[in-house]
Each structure stands twice: as C-alpha cells, then as structure tokens.
Image 1 (cartoon, helix red, strand yellow):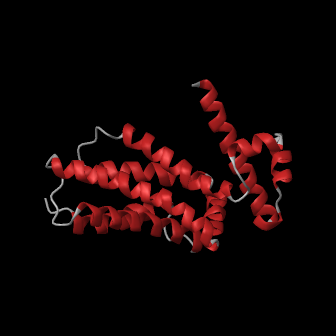
Image 2 (spheres, one colour; image 1 turned 180 degrees about the vertical axis):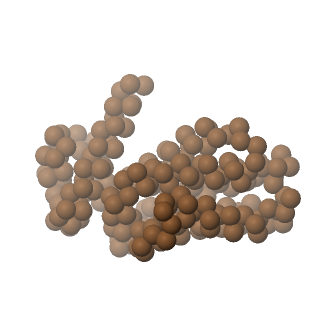
Length: 196
C-alpha cells in the first residue's frame, strides 16, 4: 500500500511539474528530458508512468476518475441524491481548482488536440456511468422521483459539470469559486430533474 501511495505521489509530481513547464515554455517546446531533469528522475522512470509527453495531459481525467470513486465511497451514506451528487462533484472541482492555472492549461491543450480529446472521452464516459449508477440507485430506493430516464439525467449533470470547467477555463470567472459556479447551475438543472 505504501509503495502504491509513493507511485501515485510521483505520478502526480511529474504531472504538476510538467504542466508548470508547459505553462512557462509552451507544450510543444518542452521535452521529456526537461521534464525528467525538473523532477529529478530518469527517462526510464518517466516512461513507467507515461508512454509519451501527451499522456501527461490525460492524467487530468484519470486522476479525476480515481478521485470520483474515492468521493463516491466517502459520500455513499448521504440520503438525498442531490446532496450526494453535489458533494461528489464538489470534491472533483475542488481538486481541479487547487491548481487552477495548471489545470486550465491541461484542459486547453486537450481541447486543442483532437487525438487527446478522443482519448479523454473515456474519462467522461466513466464519469457518466458512475453518475448514472448513483441516480439509478436513488430511483430504486425511492429517493429520486423523476420523469426523466437515468441516462438523460446523468447526461445533463455531466453537461453542467463540463460546462463549468470549460467556462472557468476559457472565460473570466463570474463567481468567486468554480464550486459556486457549478452549484448555481446544478440547482437550476436539478429543479427540472426531481419531481418529489
């Protein structure tokens, strides 16, 4: 377990240090050699974690999915589905905003690359599946009454989540935090979902 924690820590360090270099010099100008030198690791170690430089950007989605599963476990005992979903997605957005400038950079690079965007879609689909699972459970337990199909509800919530990230990345923030922005939009969408 300790070894796994160290591996995760090193992967996160490579990710953040590389993003810092991308921000300072531009993604195209940074080499794997520069990343390994900044992190104090060998190229072999780098390639144990990332097959190529571009894969560093995909770690944003991977780390969010890992955090999603931890957050779902942490909040599984919350009875109200709206509150549970809000807490889970708040956790993800908090992680995103804790290194906001670097995360914005990673998001922009993914948006600019069709290849990376296609690969990132796996993380989006995973988020959708996990939310659909939470919604389905809430419906089966009689905690959510909605005329909408589970898949449509999950799609709407994922849409609000990514719209929030995209707005935060591309536009000047209208709200004090990304979480506040998400909550306000989520409240509007939830009114159309829950007919309790």
